[in-house]
Image (tube, rainbow, N blue to C red; front, side, top):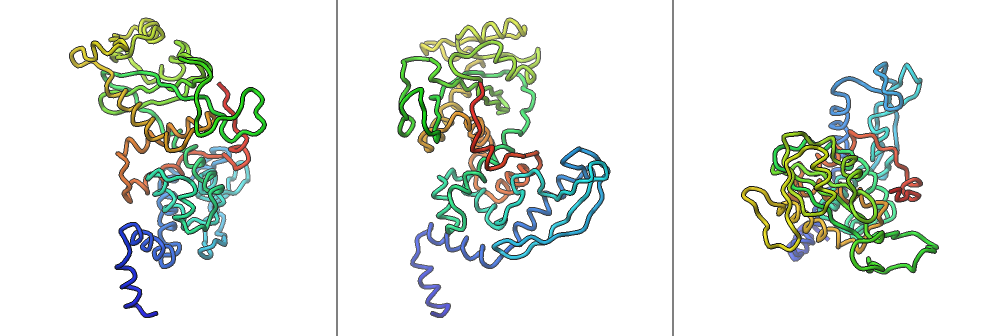
Length: 348
Protein backbone atom coordinates (compact mmCIF):
# COMPACT_ATOMS: atom_id res chain seq x y z
CA UNK A 1 0.00 0.00 0.00
CA UNK A 2 1.50 3.33 -1.08
CA UNK A 3 1.11 6.75 0.52
CA UNK A 4 -1.69 7.83 -1.84
CA UNK A 5 -3.88 4.91 -0.78
CA UNK A 6 -3.18 5.71 2.87
CA UNK A 7 -4.23 9.33 2.30
CA UNK A 8 -7.51 8.21 0.74
CA UNK A 9 -8.22 5.95 3.72
CA UNK A 10 -7.39 8.80 6.10
CA UNK A 11 -9.76 11.15 4.26
CA UNK A 12 -12.59 8.62 4.71
CA UNK A 13 -12.26 8.74 8.51
CA UNK A 14 -14.53 10.89 10.66
CA UNK A 15 -13.10 13.64 12.87
CA UNK A 16 -12.56 11.33 15.86
CA UNK A 17 -10.85 8.75 13.67
CA UNK A 18 -8.54 11.38 12.20
CA UNK A 19 -7.65 12.60 15.67
CA UNK A 20 -6.84 9.06 16.76
CA UNK A 21 -4.66 8.58 13.67
CA UNK A 22 -2.77 11.78 14.50
CA UNK A 23 -2.07 10.60 18.05
CA UNK A 24 -0.98 7.20 16.78
CA UNK A 25 1.47 8.67 14.26
CA UNK A 26 2.80 11.16 16.81
CA UNK A 27 3.45 8.40 19.34
CA UNK A 28 5.38 6.42 16.69
CA UNK A 29 7.31 9.26 15.07
CA UNK A 30 8.10 11.62 17.94
CA UNK A 31 9.30 8.89 20.28
CA UNK A 32 10.59 10.46 23.46
CA UNK A 33 10.90 14.10 22.31
CA UNK A 34 7.78 15.48 24.02
CA UNK A 35 8.34 13.64 27.33
CA UNK A 36 11.98 14.74 27.37
CA UNK A 37 10.89 18.36 26.98
CA UNK A 38 8.45 17.82 29.86
CA UNK A 39 11.21 16.37 32.05
CA UNK A 40 13.41 19.36 31.21
CA UNK A 41 10.56 21.67 32.26
CA UNK A 42 10.08 19.72 35.50
CA UNK A 43 13.81 19.90 36.20
CA UNK A 44 13.86 23.66 35.63
CA UNK A 45 10.83 24.29 37.85
CA UNK A 46 11.94 22.00 40.69
CA UNK A 47 15.47 23.35 40.89
CA UNK A 48 14.87 27.04 40.22
CA UNK A 49 15.92 27.82 43.83
CA UNK A 50 18.76 25.30 43.84
CA UNK A 51 19.03 21.55 44.22
CA UNK A 52 17.16 20.12 47.21
CA UNK A 53 17.22 16.53 48.45
CA UNK A 54 13.68 15.05 48.36
CA UNK A 55 14.60 12.69 51.22
CA UNK A 56 15.92 15.13 53.87
CA UNK A 57 15.40 18.61 52.30
CA UNK A 58 19.11 19.35 52.44
CA UNK A 59 20.71 21.74 49.94
CA UNK A 60 24.04 19.88 50.06
CA UNK A 61 23.45 18.14 46.76
CA UNK A 62 25.85 17.34 43.92
CA UNK A 63 25.41 15.81 40.50
CA UNK A 64 26.19 12.11 40.52
CA UNK A 65 26.41 11.05 36.89
CA UNK A 66 23.73 9.86 34.54
CA UNK A 67 21.97 6.56 34.16
CA UNK A 68 19.99 4.87 31.42
CA UNK A 69 16.51 3.45 31.76
CA UNK A 70 14.84 1.23 29.19
CA UNK A 71 11.33 2.13 28.16
CA UNK A 72 9.03 0.79 25.48
CA UNK A 73 9.88 3.84 23.41
CA UNK A 74 13.63 3.34 23.73
CA UNK A 75 16.47 4.16 26.11
CA UNK A 76 16.47 7.41 28.05
CA UNK A 77 19.36 9.07 29.91
CA UNK A 78 18.55 10.88 33.15
CA UNK A 79 20.60 12.97 35.54
CA UNK A 80 21.27 11.51 38.96
CA UNK A 81 22.06 13.50 42.13
CA UNK A 82 23.51 12.61 45.53
CA UNK A 83 22.83 14.24 48.88
CA UNK A 84 25.92 14.82 51.03
CA UNK A 85 23.81 14.80 54.21
CA UNK A 86 21.79 11.57 53.95
CA UNK A 87 24.04 10.00 51.26
CA UNK A 88 21.00 8.95 49.22
CA UNK A 89 20.72 9.36 45.46
CA UNK A 90 17.72 10.68 43.52
CA UNK A 91 16.71 12.08 40.14
CA UNK A 92 14.38 14.77 38.83
CA UNK A 93 11.35 12.45 39.04
CA UNK A 94 11.90 11.05 42.54
CA UNK A 95 8.74 11.35 44.67
CA UNK A 96 6.66 12.49 41.70
CA UNK A 97 3.81 10.74 39.85
CA UNK A 98 6.30 9.91 37.07
CA UNK A 99 8.73 8.08 39.36
CA UNK A 100 9.84 4.72 37.92
CA UNK A 101 7.51 5.04 34.95
CA UNK A 102 8.42 2.87 31.98
CA UNK A 103 6.07 4.54 29.51
CA UNK A 104 6.80 8.27 29.72
CA UNK A 105 5.75 8.77 26.09
CA UNK A 106 2.13 8.03 27.09
CA UNK A 107 1.75 10.49 29.96
CA UNK A 108 0.88 13.60 27.93
CA UNK A 109 -1.83 11.68 26.09
CA UNK A 110 -3.12 10.29 29.39
CA UNK A 111 -3.31 13.80 30.88
CA UNK A 112 -5.40 14.78 27.87
CA UNK A 113 -7.75 11.87 28.58
CA UNK A 114 -8.04 13.04 32.20
CA UNK A 115 -8.98 16.55 31.10
CA UNK A 116 -11.63 15.06 28.83
CA UNK A 117 -12.87 12.96 31.78
CA UNK A 118 -12.73 9.62 29.96
CA UNK A 119 -13.19 6.33 31.80
CA UNK A 120 -10.11 4.21 32.47
CA UNK A 121 -11.13 1.62 29.89
CA UNK A 122 -11.64 4.35 27.30
CA UNK A 123 -8.21 5.78 28.19
CA UNK A 124 -6.60 2.36 27.72
CA UNK A 125 -8.29 2.05 24.34
CA UNK A 126 -7.08 5.50 23.25
CA UNK A 127 -3.55 4.58 24.34
CA UNK A 128 -3.76 1.58 22.00
CA UNK A 129 -3.76 -0.89 24.92
CA UNK A 130 -0.08 -0.23 25.70
CA UNK A 131 -1.15 -0.09 29.35
CA UNK A 132 -4.10 -1.68 31.09
CA UNK A 133 -6.93 0.20 32.76
CA UNK A 134 -5.61 -1.11 36.10
CA UNK A 135 -2.26 0.60 35.59
CA UNK A 136 -4.05 3.77 34.51
CA UNK A 137 -6.02 3.71 37.76
CA UNK A 138 -2.77 4.12 39.70
CA UNK A 139 -1.47 6.73 37.25
CA UNK A 140 -4.67 8.72 37.75
CA UNK A 141 -4.51 8.67 41.54
CA UNK A 142 -0.83 9.56 41.67
CA UNK A 143 -1.61 12.67 39.62
CA UNK A 144 -4.62 13.43 41.83
CA UNK A 145 -2.51 12.99 44.98
CA UNK A 146 -0.48 15.92 43.71
CA UNK A 147 -3.46 17.99 42.57
CA UNK A 148 -5.04 17.86 46.02
CA UNK A 149 -1.89 19.54 47.38
CA UNK A 150 -2.43 22.61 45.21
CA UNK A 151 -2.69 25.47 47.73
CA UNK A 152 -5.91 27.41 48.23
CA UNK A 153 -5.37 31.17 48.18
CA UNK A 154 -6.76 33.41 50.89
CA UNK A 155 -10.33 34.45 50.17
CA UNK A 156 -11.16 38.03 49.27
CA UNK A 157 -14.39 39.95 49.97
CA UNK A 158 -17.67 38.03 49.75
CA UNK A 159 -17.48 34.27 50.28
CA UNK A 160 -20.28 31.92 49.34
CA UNK A 161 -20.18 28.74 51.40
CA UNK A 162 -22.45 25.73 51.31
CA UNK A 163 -22.30 22.00 51.85
CA UNK A 164 -23.41 19.20 49.58
CA UNK A 165 -23.64 15.46 50.17
CA UNK A 166 -22.47 12.31 48.43
CA UNK A 167 -23.53 8.78 49.24
CA UNK A 168 -20.98 6.98 51.42
CA UNK A 169 -19.36 4.40 49.15
CA UNK A 170 -17.01 1.47 49.65
CA UNK A 171 -16.76 0.82 45.93
CA UNK A 172 -14.19 -1.86 45.18
CA UNK A 173 -14.17 -3.33 48.69
CA UNK A 174 -14.70 -7.05 49.00
CA UNK A 175 -16.44 -9.00 51.73
CA UNK A 176 -18.49 -6.13 53.17
CA UNK A 177 -20.34 -7.13 56.32
CA UNK A 178 -22.24 -3.95 57.32
CA UNK A 179 -24.59 -3.94 54.33
CA UNK A 180 -25.22 -5.46 50.93
CA UNK A 181 -23.20 -4.08 48.01
CA UNK A 182 -24.84 -1.40 45.88
CA UNK A 183 -24.79 -1.25 42.10
CA UNK A 184 -23.86 1.91 40.18
CA UNK A 185 -24.05 4.22 43.17
CA UNK A 186 -27.31 2.95 44.66
CA UNK A 187 -29.45 4.74 47.23
CA UNK A 188 -29.11 5.57 50.92
CA UNK A 189 -30.79 3.36 53.49
CA UNK A 190 -32.38 6.35 55.29
CA UNK A 191 -34.07 9.49 54.01
CA UNK A 192 -32.47 12.86 54.64
CA UNK A 193 -28.98 13.45 56.05
CA UNK A 194 -27.50 10.49 57.93
CA UNK A 195 -24.21 8.66 58.25
CA UNK A 196 -24.95 7.17 54.83
CA UNK A 197 -24.06 10.62 53.47
CA UNK A 198 -20.61 12.23 53.23
CA UNK A 199 -20.48 15.99 53.70
CA UNK A 200 -18.46 18.04 51.20
CA UNK A 201 -17.90 21.74 51.90
CA UNK A 202 -17.43 24.18 49.03
CA UNK A 203 -16.43 27.81 49.59
CA UNK A 204 -15.94 30.24 46.73
CA UNK A 205 -15.33 33.97 46.51
CA UNK A 206 -16.24 36.28 43.64
CA UNK A 207 -12.72 35.96 42.15
CA UNK A 208 -13.43 32.20 41.78
CA UNK A 209 -10.92 31.15 44.44
CA UNK A 210 -12.37 27.81 45.52
CA UNK A 211 -12.02 25.43 48.44
CA UNK A 212 -13.62 21.99 48.36
CA UNK A 213 -13.07 19.31 50.96
CA UNK A 214 -14.56 16.26 52.63
CA UNK A 215 -15.67 17.09 56.19
CA UNK A 216 -16.93 13.67 57.31
CA UNK A 217 -20.11 11.64 57.47
CA UNK A 218 -23.46 13.17 58.39
CA UNK A 219 -24.30 16.78 59.15
CA UNK A 220 -21.68 19.51 59.02
CA UNK A 221 -20.19 20.60 62.37
CA UNK A 222 -18.79 23.94 63.49
CA UNK A 223 -15.49 22.42 64.66
CA UNK A 224 -14.96 20.75 61.28
CA UNK A 225 -15.62 24.07 59.56
CA UNK A 226 -12.82 25.83 61.38
CA UNK A 227 -10.37 22.97 60.80
CA UNK A 228 -11.13 22.95 57.09
CA UNK A 229 -11.35 26.61 56.14
CA UNK A 230 -10.40 28.79 59.11
CA UNK A 231 -6.90 29.58 57.83
CA UNK A 232 -8.24 31.03 54.57
CA UNK A 233 -10.62 33.56 56.18
CA UNK A 234 -10.04 37.04 57.57
CA UNK A 235 -12.07 39.65 59.44
CA UNK A 236 -12.79 41.50 56.20
CA UNK A 237 -14.71 38.60 54.66
CA UNK A 238 -18.49 38.45 54.42
CA UNK A 239 -20.09 35.01 54.54
CA UNK A 240 -23.11 34.03 52.46
CA UNK A 241 -24.55 30.65 53.43
CA UNK A 242 -27.79 28.74 53.80
CA UNK A 243 -29.67 28.77 57.11
CA UNK A 244 -28.00 25.73 58.71
CA UNK A 245 -27.07 26.66 62.30
CA UNK A 246 -23.45 25.46 62.06
CA UNK A 247 -22.71 28.32 59.66
CA UNK A 248 -24.33 30.88 61.97
CA UNK A 249 -22.40 29.60 64.99
CA UNK A 250 -19.17 29.66 63.06
CA UNK A 251 -19.71 33.21 61.74
CA UNK A 252 -20.49 34.45 65.26
CA UNK A 253 -17.41 32.73 66.68
CA UNK A 254 -15.15 34.28 64.04
CA UNK A 255 -16.86 37.68 64.19
CA UNK A 256 -17.72 37.67 60.49
CA UNK A 257 -20.56 39.50 58.77
CA UNK A 258 -23.07 36.87 57.72
CA UNK A 259 -25.99 36.67 55.30
CA UNK A 260 -28.26 33.60 55.39
CA UNK A 261 -30.59 32.27 52.71
CA UNK A 262 -33.32 29.77 53.52
CA UNK A 263 -33.72 26.66 51.41
CA UNK A 264 -37.35 27.51 50.54
CA UNK A 265 -36.08 29.69 47.69
CA UNK A 266 -38.35 32.66 48.48
CA UNK A 267 -35.44 35.05 48.83
CA UNK A 268 -32.35 34.12 46.82
CA UNK A 269 -30.64 37.51 46.58
CA UNK A 270 -30.01 40.35 49.05
CA UNK A 271 -28.35 43.08 47.02
CA UNK A 272 -24.92 41.73 46.00
CA UNK A 273 -25.21 38.84 48.47
CA UNK A 274 -26.32 35.37 47.35
CA UNK A 275 -25.11 31.77 47.16
CA UNK A 276 -25.86 31.13 43.50
CA UNK A 277 -22.22 30.77 42.47
CA UNK A 278 -21.50 28.01 44.97
CA UNK A 279 -24.79 26.26 44.14
CA UNK A 280 -23.85 26.36 40.47
CA UNK A 281 -20.48 24.82 41.37
CA UNK A 282 -22.31 22.03 43.24
CA UNK A 283 -24.44 21.37 40.18
CA UNK A 284 -21.44 21.15 37.83
CA UNK A 285 -19.55 18.94 40.29
CA UNK A 286 -22.40 16.44 40.62
CA UNK A 287 -23.04 16.29 36.88
CA UNK A 288 -19.35 15.67 36.27
CA UNK A 289 -18.97 13.02 38.98
CA UNK A 290 -22.06 11.09 37.84
CA UNK A 291 -20.05 9.66 34.94
CA UNK A 292 -18.08 7.48 37.38
CA UNK A 293 -21.21 5.63 38.60
CA UNK A 294 -20.26 6.12 42.21
CA UNK A 295 -16.88 7.14 43.63
CA UNK A 296 -15.31 5.32 46.58
CA UNK A 297 -15.40 7.73 49.53
CA UNK A 298 -11.75 7.05 50.33
CA UNK A 299 -10.88 8.62 46.95
CA UNK A 300 -13.48 11.40 47.01
CA UNK A 301 -10.97 14.13 47.97
CA UNK A 302 -8.92 13.19 44.90
CA UNK A 303 -11.93 13.67 42.63
CA UNK A 304 -12.76 17.01 44.25
CA UNK A 305 -9.21 18.20 43.49
CA UNK A 306 -9.51 16.89 39.93
CA UNK A 307 -12.75 18.77 39.32
CA UNK A 308 -11.44 21.96 40.94
CA UNK A 309 -8.50 21.93 38.53
CA UNK A 310 -10.72 21.32 35.49
CA UNK A 311 -13.21 23.99 36.54
CA UNK A 312 -10.45 26.55 37.07
CA UNK A 313 -9.15 25.83 33.55
CA UNK A 314 -12.69 25.89 32.08
CA UNK A 315 -12.29 22.29 30.85
CA UNK A 316 -10.09 23.40 27.94
CA UNK A 317 -7.97 20.58 26.54
CA UNK A 318 -5.11 22.79 25.36
CA UNK A 319 -1.40 22.00 25.28
CA UNK A 320 -0.86 24.71 27.89
CA UNK A 321 -3.31 23.07 30.31
CA UNK A 322 -1.89 19.59 29.70
CA UNK A 323 1.64 20.83 30.30
CA UNK A 324 0.62 22.77 33.40
CA UNK A 325 -1.21 19.78 34.87
CA UNK A 326 1.70 17.38 34.36
CA UNK A 327 4.53 19.72 35.33
CA UNK A 328 2.72 21.19 38.35
CA UNK A 329 1.88 17.70 39.62
CA UNK A 330 5.57 16.85 39.65
CA UNK A 331 6.41 19.84 41.88
CA UNK A 332 4.62 18.27 44.87
CA UNK A 333 5.84 15.30 46.87
CA UNK A 334 3.94 12.16 45.94
CA UNK A 335 4.98 9.01 47.79
CA UNK A 336 1.87 6.97 47.08
CA UNK A 337 2.57 3.49 45.72
CA UNK A 338 0.18 1.08 44.06
CA UNK A 339 -0.05 -0.85 47.32
CA UNK A 340 -0.98 1.99 49.67
CA UNK A 341 -3.39 3.48 47.11
CA UNK A 342 -5.15 0.12 46.99
CA UNK A 343 -5.20 -0.20 50.79
CA UNK A 344 -6.34 3.38 51.47
CA UNK A 345 -9.31 3.85 53.78
CA UNK A 346 -11.74 6.61 54.74
CA UNK A 347 -10.57 7.91 58.13
CA UNK A 348 -13.19 10.54 59.11
